[in-house]
Length: 498
Image 1 (tube, rainbow, N blue to C red):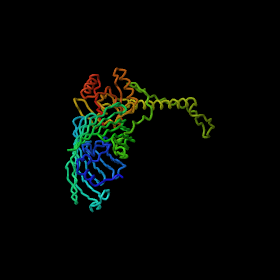
Image 2: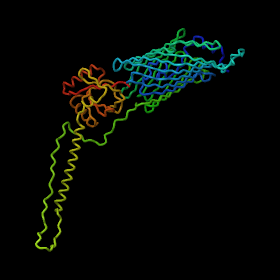
Image 3: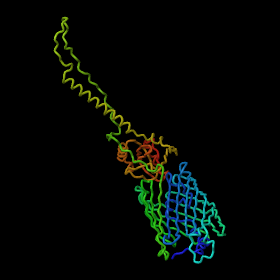
Image 4: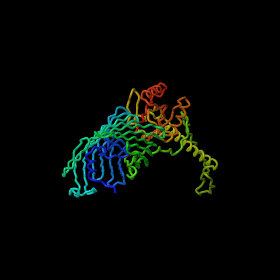
């Protein structure tokens, strides 16, 4: 019979096993906000996260950890706000905490920023003696009800982001409060020190495939250092699979699926190492994340009617000549007396001439419609590069060249995939897809072999770019070369991370 005896419980509460004071969960790689408030509002839109973890299920009073969080970003992602509830049960010890989270982002450039975070909350600590199984019941206090104590808690952290790199430091249980119950039982919160390092290695940027190794280190004074090594394979944020090694404890496998970029479901299973794994039972957790806000962009709008291919310079419309109807001859004889004579009735128009007149008029109408359509196509075929950059609210002027900065989710490439991040040197903008494609072919024939197009959904423009580069300096060089070649309205589109 598995028992939780009072001496063992107090040993956990008062000895050096403080590394377990903070509930641990495997999906920290998905939402590290619980440990580090600097990650608050780091995603798109508002997110609700639920996690349920069961550990050592075969033990009576086995640990259970539950999480509920809500966070969002504001002020163009500079500020993150959130709230969270956690329930951490370990034997007769039950901790319920409610926290408010805040983060502020300091940007250094388009790909590098630092986030600072704080959280503050209330903790309710309960010792439930009624759940204890004792060898010898000699103390009446053992049969009394629960002992409750409420105190405050805080957490501070920072996170640094740079081109796929994420580095974080955090101090949970910042105030290190000491809790004393009415029966003189004491519980001391111990300040923790946590660090994390993650890096995305893209296998295919076009398909959004990458692997992300990550390390999480936990340090508590006077206890052994604990660390987790994690690696995940991610496909376009739609599916992930990975594994985690937990120092001297377990190997965890996890898998997840994202549906319509709104619902993410994850599952993790711990394979306990060592002798404990033989009789500890299942240790696993399930995660659900619900995302709100405009995150899923519509696909590019199809062209309703196929437009004819036109040359770079469309022909001038021919003048319209309207044929006059044939002259009507008067067949009515003059009146010679007061008696109305019998008159032979004849058609006012000659049949053949009438039919020819109607046919010619219809042909003229059809010609007019074709010329109107050609004029409209000529209007659509115009390069509206200046209009496109002027209508982009994110544009800034730098070294006499306009630069627009937008998120990768706003674009689709020629393969209907998310394009690579970087600097695009744009020399053409068209509302109609076919004209953008025709311009790409023309420029390739002229020797600009890297020319292609991307679709910008918010502005409904197809951008024709002559080159994509990774640095601003190279983008300016290419833009200046384009100006020398006669493309005076050239500008630069910078596509950045979500």
